Structures are given as structure tokens and as C-alpha cells.
Image (cartoon, rainbow, N blue to C red; front, side, top):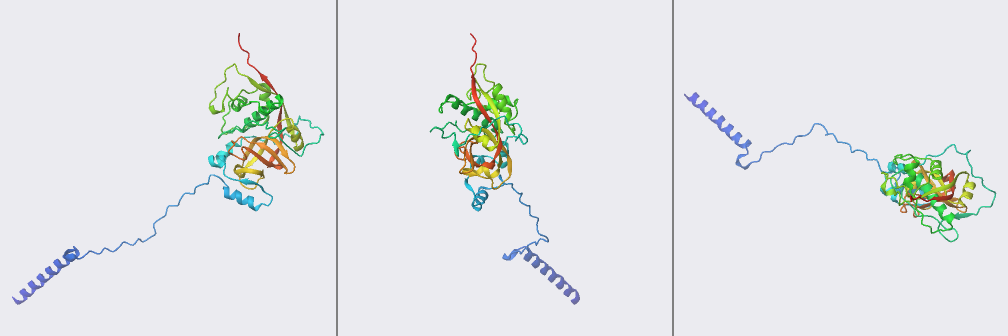
Amino acid sequence: MKCLTGRKYNVFSMIIYLIAGFLILSGCGGSETVVNPVVPTSTPSVTATPTVTPPWSVSLTDVQSAITKDPNSKWIAGNTSVTDNYTEEEAKVLCSLIPEENSSGKSNYMPSDKTLPGAFSWKNYKGSNWMTSVRDQGPYGTGVAFASTGALEVMMRISRDDATLDTDLSEWYLWWNGTGGKNPVPGKWYLDVPGLFLTLTGTVSEGDCPYSQIPDYNEPNQYVTYYRATEYQYISGKDAIKEAILTGPVAGGMKVYADFCYYKKGIYKYLTGNYLGDQAVLLIGWDDSQNCWIAKNSWSSDWGDDGYFWIDYDGIRNYGYLYKGVTVVEPVLEK
């Protein structure tokens, strides 16, 4: 009996201990349950941030630094309408000239032995600016058309001896018809092809075929005036190009590198950046004291020095085209 009572007591004690333990674990009596943090056995993987390709291979800071380090540099760089509005890949489309690498033997311009002036510019000839306004080819590879029509426009003023003559010819008509409707992106055209087209067919006024309709094309009505080049000549060599410029601006070409897109003013010479392609430009003068050409571009007046630039003699390809004379073909009206 005594032994049985002791066993009951032991069982009763165990029950009491179990209940007390349960209450402690369940948080009764105001005590808090402590949960140990789970320590990871390995470091979680980190997703790598994708590499973002910059819009330009060289930044404005890079170009300015290169200019500062070159004691012979004479130009100023800044953000322009090209660097602000296009990536480097898009800017390659603007540089649409196909260079004529093997054209040295086809020159048909015969320079004389007359002494050339040390400097000349159609922006300041006989006290007048004979150049027409700077145009904007936009994001298209139509620079060849702009250089060619630009040359013909100035030649119209020269032939009429009127620096204020209102001349605005259609680059889009020349491009569309001269290339056979070629897509203006990426473009690409030789300088001699528009010369042939402008002598045989010509182009119309900007009002009859506006560039604003690009990339669409609407044929002008049949009663429009055509403007044709009387003759165009291939020129090769620095002195020959200079002499030809005395007759009228010469459509030429140049290699374009990324730093050129940052050009603001001064005498450009390549320093840094990728080669983007060739651009057709209009050579309007030169300055021997600075060893440079003076040229007009078609990247709007917000680029460069109001759309113009000065460039080291070596920066321009050694050939170009001169348009001599303009024939105006009036429409024949039906009676």
C-alpha cells in the first residue's frame, strides 16, 4: 500500500511538470517565446547588373581632354545637335558618302598656272555672303544630295551676279529620282552620280518637292520649273580644288570620326573616336595661313559654327565636283 501510494505520487508529479512545461513553451504567464534565427549555410547568389553601352564611344569630356593634351589643337568641342539627338550608331547613317578610292585618273578639270590667293571664301566675296542657308538632312543618309544641290544653288547666284537671289532647290527630288527611289536609311551614294543626274534632268524647287515629306515621295505636277547644271567637272588635287572654288563651291568628301560630331568652332583635326563613315560637304573656301579648308555641312545650323566648319587640309579627301553654270527649264503650258 505504501509502495502504491509512492507510485501515485510520482505519476502525479510528472503530470504537474509536464503541464508546467507546456505552459512555459506556449507563452503563458507573460513570458516570450524566443525563436533563434535561421543562419543560411551559403551566400545567396547576386544577379549581375547588365552592362549598358554608352551612346558614344567617346564622351565630350574625352574629346576636350584630347584637345587639351594636344598642343597643336585649334578647335573647340561641345555638345551639338548630333551628339544630343543621335547615338553613335545612328550618326553613322548620316555619313553616307561612298568614297571614290580609285578616281585619281579621271580628272577632267584643267587648272591653270595662275597665282591663287592665300585665302578665299564665298561667305565673304565682294563684301557679300553668296551662300544659301544651312539645311538639316535629319536622321537620313542623304548628305550627298545636300552637298550637290548646295553647290548648284550658289552657282545660280554667281551666274546671275546676285548674292541675294532666292534659291532653294529640292534635295529630296534629287535623291529620290537620282537614286531610283533608294531608301534614305542607310542611304549611301557616290558624288558623281548626282552630277550626271543634275546635268541631264535637274531638280525642282523645294516648294515643289519638300524634304519634309521624307521618307514618303509625291511626284511634283508636270508644270514645274527644272534647274539643271550646264556642266559638272571632276577635280583632283588641293591646288586644283582651290582654283575650282574660285568659280564656285566644290562638292567634296571627308572621313568622319566620332570627335567631329562634337565640333563647335576652330580648325578641326582628328584626335579621338571611332571612324563613322564619309560625309559629303561643300567646300567654299580656304585659308593658307591656317592650313585649312572652309566648308558647309548639312547637320543644321545648331551643329558646328552655325553649320560651317574649318578643317585641316589633310582632313578632306583629295577630290571633288564643280558645277559650272545653271540652265533653268521653264514648264511648257498647254494652250
